[in-house]
Image (cartoon, rainbow, N blue to C red; front, side, top):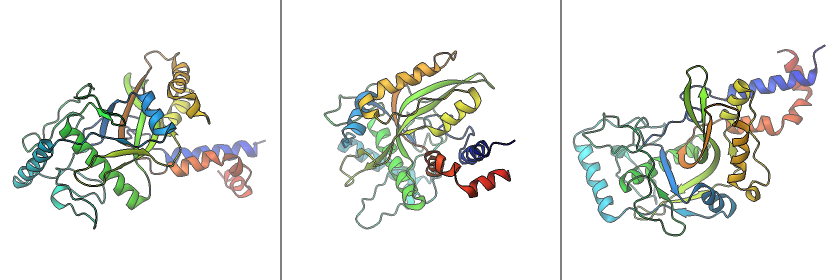
Length: 318
């Protein structure tokens, strides 16, 4: 005899699976940094960054590019536009540099557009717009950041472009789709794809954040949104389904437990896997998971849905 409870749970899991993108195009699963969508954070270190952003709720600041850098960016934008370089692909609703329009009261920037498929560390000019460059390894920032400042491994020009692009994408997604796509990823899981024997990188803990700036000559600020931390749901589903490996849930007292202790729990869970590794790193990027609210609602209200007679009837019908 079929267990009604088990049938409902199977149906709920089926619906959740359909909400997840498990393709190689999903950066939540197959993560590859790009200059257009990645800002590696090297200072504060991840554990301290977690304390400041999540526990203390502080607003952190990216160093403001000097006047020479800002002037060079404006000059380069003008040169790029004058030679009619084909604009990079943009997200729906996102303006390019040549057609940027600002609503009343919002600053206008003339930075060149960022291509979503270019590696981190590449500076795009009219001469290199079509020439891919391998990502540069993370390094220490050019100078030690001041208190409440964020240090990245990018140059001032790269950082200014990337932050502009990330802010533009995040605002477009929020205004047009009502979802946040901007996160600080804490921790990176390196796992082996058995089908290809390839080492894959996937972000672990996602901190929802806002990237703001008061005016063109003001620095970008980073703060946590009033949303919950998210354990990468696509990765968690992949590991549980394909490897029978369940990642530890985010504890309710994560702020007291701390980032290091939680990542240690994940490290312990993967230690039997040959070639797998967890690295402690922090990255600001966009992660498109537009149906995350539906996925989380199904998970959070599983007991309620399981007891609902209508869902039980739907489950019995397959």
